[in-house]
Length: 291
Image (cartoon, rainbow, N blue to C red; front, side, top):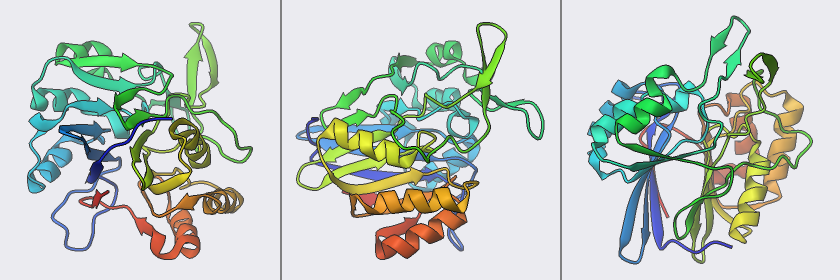
């Protein structure tokens, strides 16, 4: 059981899509800015940084967001479209010992070999050493980590379903030379607990499986009411059967809102809309949620 926030807001700083005639720049990746409030304490938490710092900076300027207000950065997983430019952002923020919160596996080798061999994890330009040299204080843990009362990470998500999967063929190397499948144990999400209103779950890509993430969030918070799920669900290349099972499982929870984009995929968005109707919104750059 975790404590409660008084209120929170979430602004979509970066996302794959933008609306018609939008002044914002889209990019493959996501970044959110959360403002969390409890009594007289207010903290601004950056969740992921996308992969294009110039586009992220452009959108922040349009939204009148000064990076110096950021109090911590949560990295949901290692992939470049969520991590590329962490060091650039730290330079813009200009603080010392800024918490960088992630799973211990964040900096591992993470690669694909189809259509060709390519590392898709954290790049050398954003190595742990460079993060720390530019003001970041790295907090790496497999366990739920409280950022402030009412706001906690999921920690490493237990795989409870038999139909969810990472969604992409990823590999890593262990014991110096052994190539194994990478099942993305570093995929974490963020839980905001709002008194009397339920929990808000913010995901990056949901490589751990969105149903697994929801189940773990309920266990951690002690709250079955879900005010919102916001982020990527990584169903873009999932077969229809997996999409159907995922949406069916989500419909069994008490959810007020799902706003999904990035890696969710059009077919999954359509299925979500068909089931959740007005409770579903496609995610896009520049959106703001107030709870």
